[in-house]
Length: 392
Ligand SMILES: [Zn+2]
Image (tube, rainbow, N blue to C red; front, side, top):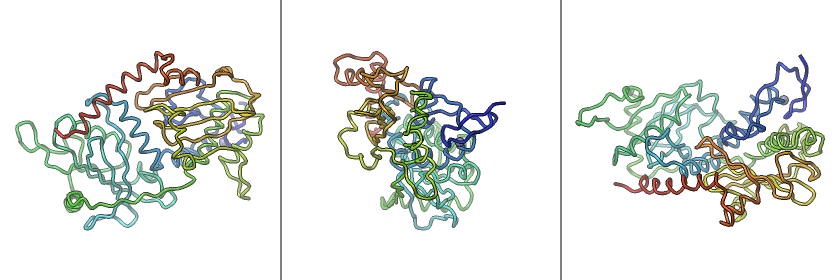
């Protein structure tokens, strides 16, 4: 067995410690990115630890959680779908609600404003993660209360699917908070539609939440970690820089600085990699140019002496970071035209084209056939959205 140098920590490791890694993480649609974004020179330690502390810090931030939910909604065209991601409102305190001392209650809403109250374990270190510590919620018990909308059977079905999808792979008891009835008006057993039988505590909680929702006086708190994206940006530089530019990228100063950004040294010496973080750019009109509706957009372009990368979600939350010297060449990029990868996590698909080609499509100068297909889905989704939002 040979050895390899881990892309993320730079340590020489045994081949047996290598793991398959998506340079673009799965929550951004990386599983469906072009094959060359799959890399094998990442050690299992980095894979596990960076998943929890770096990917999740970004993915579960309030901003990214909700913008990915918005992006999915722009592409959802049918009611019998897998379900849409829920939007996170924040943590709440509700009078009369029974919350164990090491738990918090978190308020979420579904696609037609279904109310969801999730009482889940709290982890101080992940205070800013929507949904809390993702490992804890897989293993430790929690309980989620679901208040469906009843105005139409179709909305009801999509709301249900969305709730069950959001709670899958979690050790969560699911409590339905209306009396379910069949088409003839007879009461239904909630355990027949994926819910658990309520305990006496649940009955008390259900009433307390129902009362709070009715009063309209639920105020939520959002915890924000201002550095939620910094290590993630550096990790993405390593994964994408290596996927696009290969070994030449590893020999450059940017790769070295990005590693320092992913694993900040204890002596406080910070990375000198240049870029603009998400919150610094949050209001920039530039996000509209550097993105695509409903897409996770990754752009790579030459800016003076450097290659730069810009990432945005649904034309929002852009960040920009340098990727390395412009003297590097990539078999995947026409240096004059730049590179654009649009990922559509909700559709399990991607569109890859030049940055010049993308701008031509957006301006209507020259349409890209793959993006035209996405545009058709988007206009169908816009009509569907009206149906979802309007009370019938
Ligand atoms: Zn490593």
